[in-house]
Length: 409
Length: 181
Image (cartoon, helix red, strand yellow):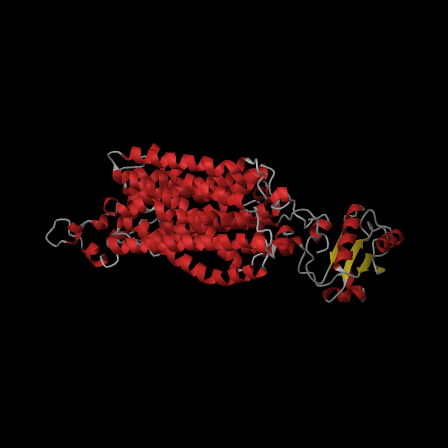
């Protein structure tokens, strides 16, 4: 329409970090915190290597889900040729770039499969052993250490490749201004999203679901995806609000983009709930012992508090809070919702993984925090490097004017 | 017809505009002139026109929320009453009051009522169905579903004055103005 009130000339200081910007210190600060915390995690592991490794796995699954969710977001934007999201897409691309880190960060898990995963125990396969387990025998062709390690390396390399490819191509367009880049990424986002869907599903099943190898849930991959997409959105909201607070993205990301990010967040709160309830509901209905055990551990006894907190905090509270239009358009309230949901997603990962380490009840400890700061620190160090390297938005994207002028009805 | 509060023998004034942009700017001026009983008519939705007209946020979301909550509560209560009070049956060894089993229908009826609230609430707020309107007396107005853009100001508006309003609309860029009976 003719009432365009945005000037299409972008102020360079709004879309680029200044040389003396505090954000430029992010790689250094986060990197030091990350390395120090990882060292502390190793030190704290002490006499409970299984608990320590599962705390570390919780941190890994939490942080990698930010990158996986961002990868889904970016590929969906290219696939649908979305206009509104261009001004926030670069932040998501910067969240994809650090995915290569996990190839290294997963090494402690892959080297200690026998500590973490019960199905590695050879006694389960021995018919003469008191530990003999028929389900372990039938699942052995899939659940064995070499195949598991090979699959894990494939997932990690695929995620790293997709993350780096979209990041480097999109940032490359900043210099060349070549519209062909957009066309190519649109084309490649279709196979990329299929690979992402398969990799994230199988990765969630392998790394988390097989902790209790008797248990199975066919919707588990979707469950993890729902949380991943949600946490990527919330992380982006927090980053946008932080950058705005430093005077960046002024006149670029507007209240209209907040509103849309808020709507998507609300949508994925509902989607997560729908999947979570579907998973619980079918298992409750069918009442098959090998699948109800998993929920029994979480819903009865000492873990039930965490389950109730998850149901309230991951659904009821954000559902009601994010419903009004106004609260999605005010930076403070949107930021509170996003920060709360990031915390809830961590609780979700904790709730999935840690009952394996502490069936007797939640034992949150310092090691959970150091593992989180370790993995998260390194991840955001690379993110910070990517943030400062290029513009904060894809400045030569052909749909940028559409995104700048975007308005909700 | 109760015409006693009309400032004129006419229903109101109708002004035609050549383009959506002209209409948009005219709406801003009509809004700023302080009119309250007026409307814009276009063959397709014009982006941002609600702001140019100074329209307030709709009350519809509250109707939808109320209807949705009513539907969900009704469904949950209905199933509780049927399964645990009126006709208790043991189904697959579950307790009579198995709230888990009630959730899908609670969800569905909540959605159904919310959708009803949205559709019928919208119709009520827009006073639909409306099979006839005084503007239909204008021959020019027939083009509103085709390629013409209009503003109408009702004579019940306290600021309405037959001659002055037509002049004002011409000043705002109308290509044609008329009074509607």
